[in-house]
Picture (cartoon, rainbow, N blue to C red):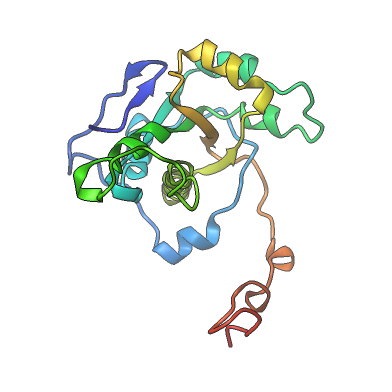
Length: 225
């Protein structure tokens, strides 16, 4: 079953393979190097073909057992984004991160579907007969949806856009679900704001942890070299 993509509960138009218009692209290492969280955007809309490319690339993410237990809600007009702002606004926003993100011209909310994984791994080819969660070392439904979200972030950079992944406050999830009719078995793990950056470049090299602090070779505590 194909992963659901919704534009405020309408199935999004989706180009067939090979039908995307050609866009200027970067070298992959440049995309990775330039990726950062952007929270301030111009009001210039994201072209529809770029929106479709971003979502299409999300569907290329890996998923355990090819379960593809994800769903994406695309909000790309002012009324829908205003509904999201009203439904998901946290009671406190001391750093103004939520208010800034919802000024973007495009929001894509990523949802994980645990049932898709439990059902997939109860199939005969997996050698299991039940839907027990005890066998899972980590919630792969959330991890895989996070990988799909990263592909959206990278695709945005490749298209010359800025993007930011941010969460929905736990006390606002029910309100968000009700506002957009999200089924109970889909859990919103976060949203991606996307648009043309209105922020000056920032140099984060001094804050990035060095490789020697986080990479171990052969055994823990041995530097990567």
